[in-house]
Length: 250
Image (cartoon, rainbow, N blue to C red; front, side, top):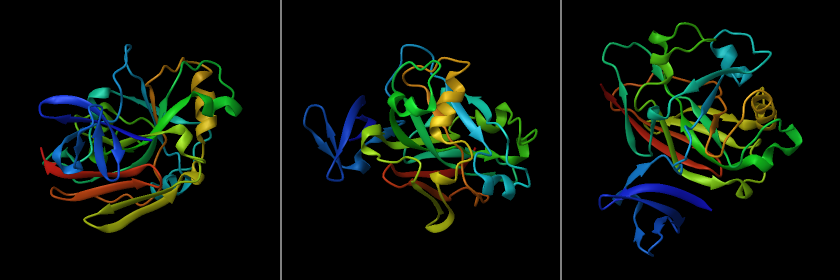
C-alpha cells in the first residue's frame, strides 16, 4: 500500500493511492494536483531521529575523490529540513554548487535495540524517497557535513509515498534515477550500497535505540550535478515513487 499525508481544504489528511488518485478516509477521491503534499510520515510522540549516510556508494565516493569509507559516515538531520512532494527547495543566491541526492529512506516501525542484521527487516515499517540536497560551498569537508549543508529549511524533500515494507520484496535491488528538466543525470541501484540496510540497522541499534518513526537516509550513487533556480528535479526509486521538486532562489 502507498500512503501519503496531504493538506486539502485547509486540513491535514492521510490518504492512500487509488488508481492514480488520492483516496481519503472519508471516501473522497482527489487528483494528485489538487493537494499540498507533506512528507509521508505520521507524527510521533518523541523527537524523530533522522540519520543520514554520507559516501555510502563507492561510485559516489570516487566521484568526490574520496576512498570508500571503512565504517558508516553518518550525520544527524533536523525534522525541520523536511518538505513534501512538489514543493520548492531554496537555493541561496550566492552559492556556486548545489546538488540533489536521490536516496532510499527507511522508516523504522518498532523499537530497535541490539538488533541483528538477520532480523533487521522486522523493524522496518516502510520506505520513501528522499532528496538530500547539499551545497558544496558550505561544506567543511565531506566527512563532517556542517549544519548549513544538511539542515537548511526545505533542503530535504521526501515522498510522495510511504510504501509498506511488505510490498517491497528486495529493497536492496531497486533502481534509482534522477532527472533534471527531463534529462537523466543520475542512475544507480541500491544493491551498490557499501553498507546495506540490515547492516545499518544492526550498527545503529548497537549503540542507540531506534524508535518508531525514525528515519535512515541511505546515501546516493554518483551523478550529482549543479541545480539552478527553475530546475525541476525528479528523484525516483523503483517500486517506491517519483519525488518532484523545483529549485528557487532564496
